[in-house]
Length: 63
Image 1 (cartoon, rainbow, N blue to C red):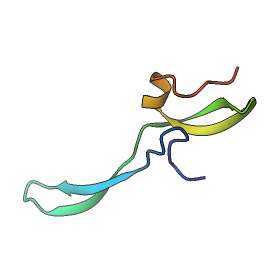
Image 2 (image 1 turned 180 degrees about the vertical axis):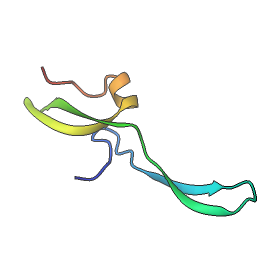
Image 3 (image 1 turned 90 degrees about the vertical axis):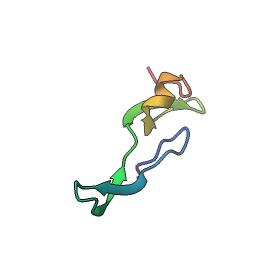
C-alpha cells in the first residue's frame, strides 16, 4: 500500500537538506499520515489519512 492520503492524495515531497557549509543532500518530507478505519460506501476500510483531512472531517471514521 502506498503511503499517500486516501482522501486528498497527499504523498511525500522531496527537497534538499542544507548543512552549515551549504552542501545539499537529498531528503524527503513525509506527510503526517495516520492509519484509521473509515466508512466508504457503507463498508469499513482501514487506510492512511493525513491529519489535515481528519481535522477537516473530510472522511467519516468507522465506529
